[in-house]
Image (cartoon, rainbow, N blue to C red; front, side):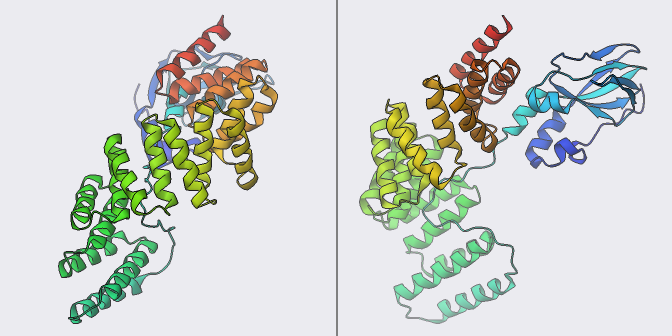
Amino acid sequence: MKNIFTPKLRNIPPFAGLPEQACDYLQAHLLRYDFSPGRSIISKGKRGSFFAIVGQGALIIQEANGETKTLLPGAMFGEGMMRYGVPSSFSVRALTETSLWVIKRSDWLIAQSVPLPVKEKITVPKQKKKVRNYRWLSTLIILSIFIITGITILGPTLFNYTNDLITKLAIDADRLDLAKEYLDIVIKINPESPQLYDTLGFILYQENKKIESQGIFEKALILDDSLASAQNNIGVIFMDEGDITKAINHLENAVELDPTSATTYLNLGNAFLKAQDYQSALQSYQKSYELNPDLIEAKVLWASVALEIGQPSAAKEVWQDVLTIDPTNAISNRGLGVIAVLDKDFENALPYLQIASLVLPKDAITRYYLGVTWENLNNTDKAVAEYEAVLALSQNEELIQRAQQHLARIQD
């Protein structure tokens, strides 16, 4: 057939609000199917698990109330099947030679899980993006450079204060380029300053240039291996790279040099967790939130480890405490839901897991336990949808196998 248009998903409501990466993924996985006249495409009550856009020809759709209408090129159907995995509430058949563009539910779920880059916890404070006019910032940076280069005897305290001020202003203005340009210049003025290299490494890390940032952090440590922030920062780099032994070594150095840093203890806990040293992770997380009671992440992770090592009561108490501060905290809701499932208290598990799933729809663990909950509450349609989501989202072989076993049991 000729003149079959290819839809641009970014212009279609179910996809227009998705992140660019997710939309591009779905566009690349758009499938074309051709149907002869009279061919049945989906019957009411069947689980189609797809969304369709008419590319060519004509279809007839019969709604649940018995009404029928004709679908022409550009018409769409099946959003509920794609989003939620529900059975079709209508029947569709081809009136003429027809082509459909189809998005499968599995591809839709994968698109939801396309991750955004995650920034590790470098100890230079992260600033929130602000939409403001910062034209004055370039002038201030240039003026500062003239001041620094014009003063032949500049005390180290004033020098460091000026550098910190300028770089923080640039970061606050979301102008990493200006911060980097400024640091490149002042490093030439004072090439022996480990703090300058440490800050430059942070800028490069924020730009996702991890290899370059590692080299810069190493320069900072060569100049001063007692710089706690650089020890922490290079530890985070090694943790990103999967070299957990080196990460732990540097992070332990960092907490020894600065035992008041809650963020460094949090990073150390993450490293121990990746090394499956649960007791050390537990101690690091506990120290982190003792130093900073507002650091909810440390408390949440502490409870996760407590549950892992068989302390559900302690984990439950901490997660409930977190929810008094942050009722939508996804990990705490998931944890309390999991504990309720383990206790076979499925009615109480459901609201916790539903909140967690709304906040983190790509989390396969939440979707698995939500499936178990729906299955035990005798809602097999919703259970199947959750288990299918696990298969689409997870790369954990054990979790996938469990979901497959549940699906097989439901089908039997």
